[in-house]
Image (cartoon, rainbow, N blue to C red; front, side, top):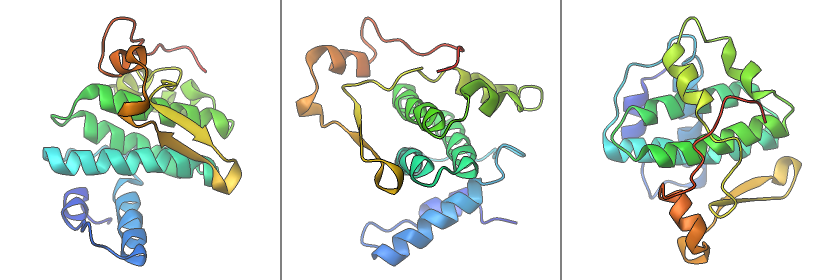
Length: 181
């Protein structure tokens, strides 16, 4: 049985070595790997939820680098757990759009990615279906390809006023649709 997500999140240290960080990332993956077979009922505090959301954001890039559907499923589970916390849901939507884009880049149709959980876990499917179809161009950019692929967060200072309003949920923010993209 995998280590509990809550215990993994509390084990994070900002002064970790590269090897320790790699090990911690693997522990997060293993704790989430089977999550959509049995979605975790854990509720994380705000700090751990932000940490998990950061793991999911990095994970979306790694999904593309490795063309890894199992990691995509673990990221989806992580986003579900993060969405149940008190962090801003719009941040979950931004990272969810990255996962949706990552699936497209590895040739995985979005609705096929999540529809197998429709009957068993409708709350997970509802979240995944709500992820925006496109990554907000002012929030993230893409660079590299293959193993060097990376989603990169655009610093707030570089965002246009319109993109900043969209990121903050202002007028014109498209929260997603269920059509594939």
